Length: 145
Image (cartoon, rainbow, N blue to C red):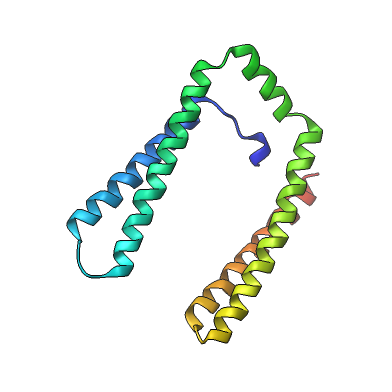
């Protein structure tokens, strides 16, 4: 679960590596497949932008870990593992899950009303995947606790 995510240097190195791979893939695919296909160009730009963003966030967090004193990092870890903060985080995830389901439903109706069948089906599919994931996680944690 996200509230137990460890903020170690190794995690941020993996984050940086995935960002670099995505960035390089986006740049190389742009150079190799630079055609007139707007959808492909947009996808390549998304890979490049997402990769650069991951690289930048990972680098900043890794530098922060290097510069922050160990006592402060230990205090942040204790606060992150605090039961009250974990409960607040879980509540926030529940609210954002319900909001995302509502947004998917509204988008599906908007796309259907505009005559875009494929995006409407994708929104409904995303909503079903989200509800199914929530149900499976709920059943798993209910049996575990």
